[in-house]
Image (cartoon, rainbow, N blue to C red; front, side, top):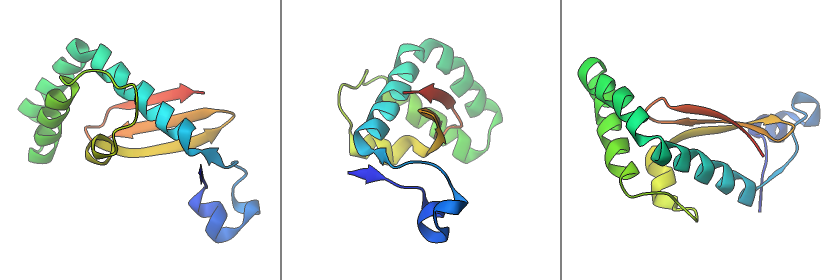
Length: 112
């Protein structure tokens, strides 16, 4: 299975020059980003605590949610329920570059 750019699909190939991306690559991008959060959980904890103190109710909720889910440890395979719970977006930048954003505001630029 492959993922396609919505703009390219709706407006044609002249609107976006991105290529189709294998779903397996999207999964790997998510797994790598998630495992970075788990690995850097102590660093992330400071950010989550700040969101709980100073953020909106939704930001505080997302921080608590990420804290609890990160305690489950690193991934070796995709977990659709986790993806649906924590992922805001994955943007394909081209040349193997991706921008991933989680619902707590955490962002990573990655290259695959």
